[in-house]
Length: 290
Image (cartoon, rainbow, N blue to C red; front, side):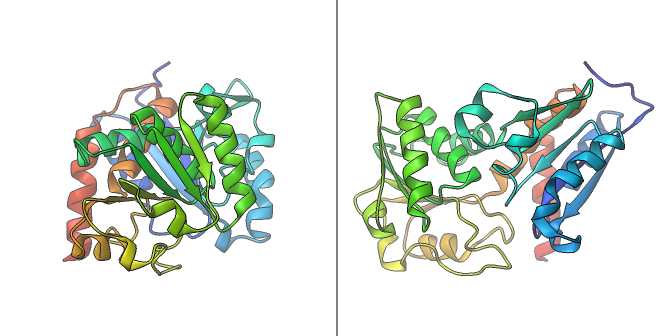
């Protein structure tokens, strides 16, 4: 149900190392364009006592303060699930939540990441071959983009994570959801990547606070495409190396914008203009890079 235009709607993001998040601007600017007032707070585990162990307390606090909802990101996308009342079909299937709506005293968990990635992929890598896809990273974000890859048409998904149990659990879950597709966990990143049509990177490697290359440079070669979900920095070392080697690349800004657009609608009950949000993100990124 749409909210009234005079009331300030309180939302926010809960996670670690989120000070450079684009979410506040995305939500606040789009709300203003629609004649709404939205406040978007960053609750950074890196800056509060107890760190990520404070998750339950933080959720209680924002709900008590009348928030309409919050986004959650690393490392809370799976840890938050036991603290919720109900899950959407996708959130349950993925065992990962990135959007929580507070309504009538209850907490509803959703996953908008998978749709955000799928929409970004459709626009940014049209015609990309999806016979065999490598997924690097099997956490909450990895689950969402793996689900999206299969929804987009991938026939075989090879999952690698440094936590082999986590990769195996995700592979097993996706096999149940998509029994007509081949989903396997691999013992090494090389095994996942070799012979694949493209790579989706969904681990924290490449973020500003965790720089590095999650896939050996020599494995990045055309006609392979490479999609990253990291968007700070927008050009990660992975994308820079892949592009230099001749691969088509997809940065993480599209997923960030489109997942935010879906979350915005869940929070305020109004459909945002996703193209306007994307244009705003690009203009701010251009200013920041200048």
